Amino acid sequence: MKIIKKIFLFFDVILWNVPTKYYEKYKFNKKLKNAKNKINEFIKNNKIPKLQIGTGGKSHFIDGWLNTCICDSGKTIYLDATKSFPIENNKFDYIFSEHFIEHITFEQAVFHLNECFRILKHGGKIRIVTPNLEALTILHNNNNITEIQKKYLENTYEMWLKSNDFPKQSELFDVFTINNFFYSWGHKFIYDLKTLKYVINKCGFRKIKQCKIGSSEDDNLNGIETHHLDTSIEMNNYESIVVEAIK
Image (cartoon, rainbow, N blue to C red; front, side, top):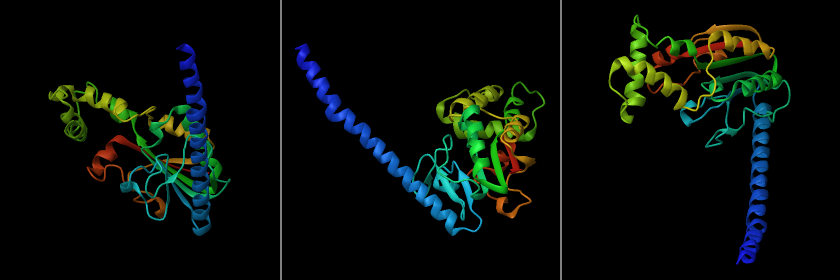
């Protein structure tokens, strides 16, 4: 009986697992090649190539930009932003990511930003929007909470906590809001302003400056945020840091 099981196991590996492994590798390589071709076509057909990383759903598309995402769904072009980009040096004028970089580790972010620096043209710009650690931590045990902070806590409860039967006591909203933010969205590293500036500078960028949501001195970067548009731009303003920098 044991010999028969071993024979079946052997044929299962040979006839199923091995072909499946090579087929998956073939499909991935084909997807990567297809993405590279589309990226090159976009660069060729646009005088000012602009890249959005971590586009996500259709509601986050930006017209005139190359919208990329690891999910590779619909119109998005496949791009794993934690690995080497299938893009040659000095090809893009602009790079934008919104509520993406917090979903990868700090080490991955360093690699990612180095890749962004590599593919940007000299004088090219990057704009990053990401949650602000300070905006979250200041909520905890704050007896002098502001109106916007109170609204943020209440908004979070109504949108994300209420349906999960979390406590309704408003004095507990801070703890549940902070925990929900870290553990419900797959966030891996949350930045404050000084840490975000540090890692951007470490990767070679200069003239780093903080901006406001939807606002930029550069028309190509003005009004491109889409996060929270379905709920409240005011909430995005409260929880986010926006930084621009130049190569």
